[in-house]
Length: 156
Image (cartoon, rainbow, N blue to C red; front, side):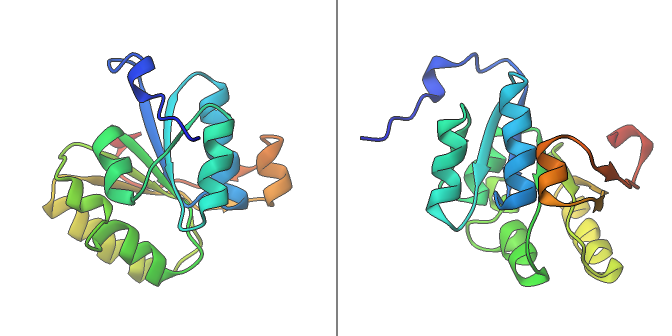
């Protein structure tokens, strides 16, 4: 039986989300949860969500649910279509209706796709940092990666 432990945690403490819990995103979420950050995660693969829950994070049923719980969201997705759906689909992040969030986009996508998403998010009151990662999944697990981030200084 799966349990939802959200009520056991301080709702006033820091909360982060990760959308895309594959090799890289799963490592990001694992490190956040291990550091004591309330970490909400979504992935289309249930086993990835279950792994996060076993590591002390919270399995969310959609990107929208991650957005409802988190002020900062890391996206780590396999392709532009998944990115678009995670942000703007019917159960996407923007559907949470929360202004003031910061999305940290770590995937390797064309700049045009990221800039278009940044503009659409800004209209909804959500900021975005472009933060592609240099390194492998095994390096992410050992915290041995480099992040090249750009965006508005205030969002850092």
